[in-house]
Image (cartoon, rainbow, N blue to C red; front, top):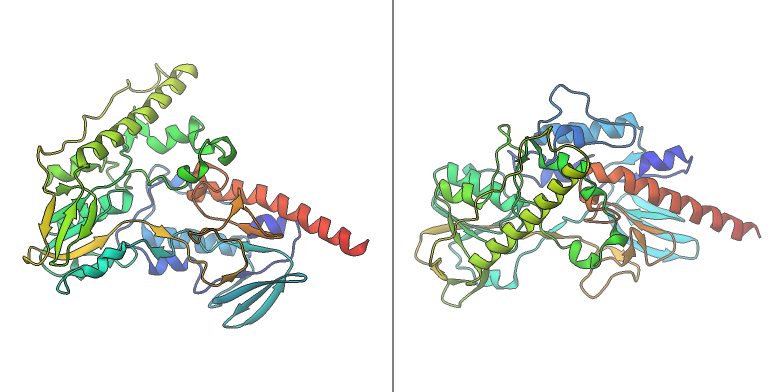
Length: 401
């Protein structure tokens, strides 16, 4: 957004609570790699120039990429400036920070969608001897206590963490809820290549029947491993990870209760994956790629044991750590503008918030399905900056009238 505003000669400042790429520096596990190939990190005026376009950036490389971009566009970033409150006033907004106040006619919220880990309320009934860690806090297996680990959540973060922790020698249980299975490579090409080429990632928010539901869809079970392997539940059970159903509660005497829907959850995930692959196959046929790529194929169904356990005694000592990979929510506790719904989510229309001159960036399916990705930020910023410029021009005309 800063790059787009500069192109329009709109004076602005970027307030950052820490250093540039702060959340990547402080809220990610050590071995994390981007889920998208290097070529897909495309920002306005900035793209990958290395010799491994199909590889996946490591955590330090992601930090460098974002830091280098800020430098290349000369973004007017004020680091170590923590916003404490935002209020509306007669001219726009009053932004209070620990470094002083700012007045602005227009405000863009780019504080992200992954500020606070979603942990169920019943986590408070967890036995005291068990350490609870969120995916935001997890760094590496060596930082965990010796003994078994229960990973709750089976999307991208959960599957990657479960795989790493099990390879460290610890027994791992994985509690599986709603998830979307996906092959890393399909018909000889990265799945992200297919979704990009077929226009799946460019689907707009105003083309979706239920955008609220679409914004809650779990992330694909993808991992950016150097060998470009598929990391799904079958890959995890093959190395010994034990699958259980969705964690439904914890009893007062410390027993975890799992839903009996594991088989159905996995069947639904397989169905969604195959629908996506059907769409890709149809696009390949329509665009004459059928003879230029590998034949269509389908992964074998997710394997689920006949009678997955419905309970686990957490006081028995087998489980020492629970890792909550159950998703995140944004933090708008500092936003004193009446634009939040009853669940604390910001009300907006494709990033145009329900308050004059207020905009949103960097949340799932903001304007396109790819809004969650680095690759989606540029298109969103171009369109929102155009709306922003028109609003600013209108405000100036009203003042001069």
